[in-house]
Image 1 (tube, rainbow, N blue to C red):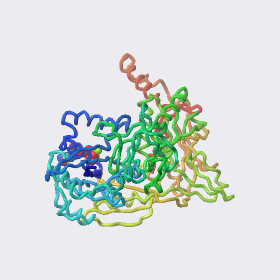
Image 2 (cartoon, rainbow, N blue to C red):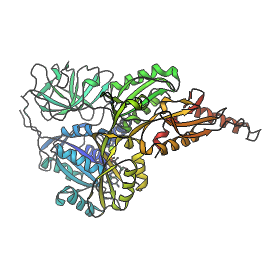
Image 3 (tube, rainbow, N blue to C red):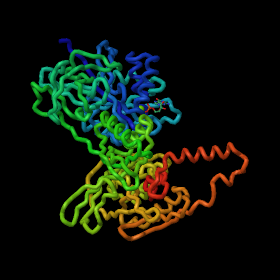
Image 4 (cartoon, protein in one colour):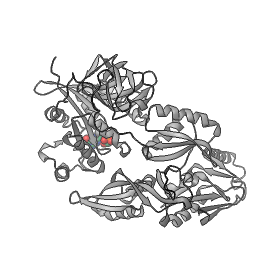
Length: 598
Ligand code: GDP
Ligand code: MG
């Protein structure tokens, strides 16, 4: 059999440093797609980023490249998600590769996600090709950035390729370098099959589609495969590669990167990181690194119109098909009625799902403030987990409450270190370390409760550092905290959907802030509404929403009909996101008010 020359690589970068643009140039310069197709493809790609994969994802493209010396290569360019919520997926995509193009913006230099990605690449023992991009920018300072790469990452400055993905400079050098330094995938095509799943998506016709890299053995249409994590078996319908269009093949063998379909009805059966083997001749052990992903952030989703409850259930069922890290179960709230408690990998994931439900399924939602999972040890020794603040047990039976902590790495210019520390301190962070990366940049490391991160940490960080801070985090486990449940009462009634968990030391401040915020957010009603914050039976803060005096339109010049109509229309629009809670009409924003505290 003819010796194939295969190179599997991905592109890693901090967001906006030019990963997508370079990928486009590589596809163009290898004639994988024409300029015209590129435009269409690009649009697809963008839709897709937004939709997170309804059709084909542009994330495992096969291309052919003839080197300057005339040798022919097959390249597989594997895309990685670019957000901290998806670190595990990034790491599994990198596990499919032998090399990574590391892009650093010639004006911005190294940022937090640059480092995080490099560490993942090194963990996966990838050959790194350093590229300084955007050298066409007037503000580019490639020499400074090169020195950073040397000082911070120990990269040999002579190996750095200077490029502009936009102006098509340096692309040939990058392609040539890939052939030189990225190793040929090792593995035996006759060995028992080991195919790594690095992504999957649901297609209504073909079922779950696994994106795989074949590490050992060969897989053919008709083979009976077995998922090594679950033991579940399926029969292969189709295998193929993306060119970038899906192109069916007879088989995939060592080094191939492509897709497998096998009438798998549930994406939960094609877990990222899992190993596919053959049922008749299974591999002894799975590829390393598989983890079952657990949601870290939970919130309640309720239809504004309770008639939409069944539609909401269907929407979640549909979304779950394509997203095995989405969790949900029915939940009832006294205040909001019937809804669902949903678990997400992180805030971005949560926002994506909420938006899709509203946009694609046309359901108006009330979402409650996100919460983490608390671990509660009761006085009788029993340990339970709590993902909904209103379900926190009574204080008398609680021995200890533990909450998840993250290791947060914040990279800033040293002028802003003070500001960063102030924010981290306010967010109950424990200072761990401070490392100077060069003369200017500092890595500040804190252990911070995840619950503080899911609130407005990143926004605060950005606004107090003029946008210069970049940020990355990883979960490190549970630690005990002095936490209490704060209840909010409207008109004397406790509103379960507004309860939240807060540190005892901040409870009075937060209580005061939240009742003031509620007063701001909840419109005046026909009667006076007291707002109270309580810990157990004790009221810790109070405000009052005054009653409306007269018709809101009365103040407008009596005759101006159009103006009056506009105002009424505007009010109606505002109403869509209102929910009657007992006797009080509460807008969506009020349920999220706790996010804006502190
Ligand atoms: P990604 O987030 O890493 O995928 O970055 P993109 O490829 O989306 O690029 C982010 C922005 O930088 C876009 O506006 C690009 O047009 C721009 N960009 C990318 N490469 C270059 C380059 O070489 N020079 C200049 N001037 N702009 C670039
Ligand atoms: Mg991009």
